[in-house]
Length: 133
Image (cartoon, rainbow, N blue to C red):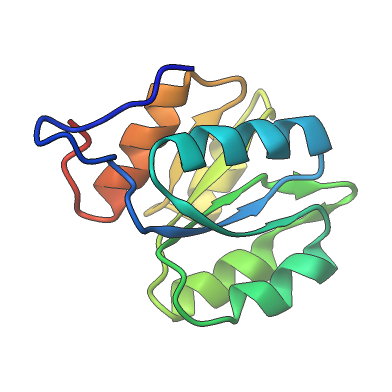
């Protein structure tokens, strides 16, 4: 993937600490590559809700990418924790129907899998109040 940068030459996600919750290890690694290529510091990759919840409670998170369904569980408890602390997050899901996610989390963005790297980067940059280009 080409390393994206903004007009001023800086990476669009420079210094952002991003929590990634994804149960497909290959997709998690792909997200890590996309985010670090755009300048983000990955906080941690989590493949279970149990692993993600304590990390979501950690300090210094800029944003999170959450697969809505992790195994048979949803990430609702992780999303609630992030929301209560004002940490922006996006759902990254392979679910064909996202109406239930959007009805439960009307203020949250949903990116459907698979997504182009620029879509992921742009969404995170916008959530952090940064210009993606």
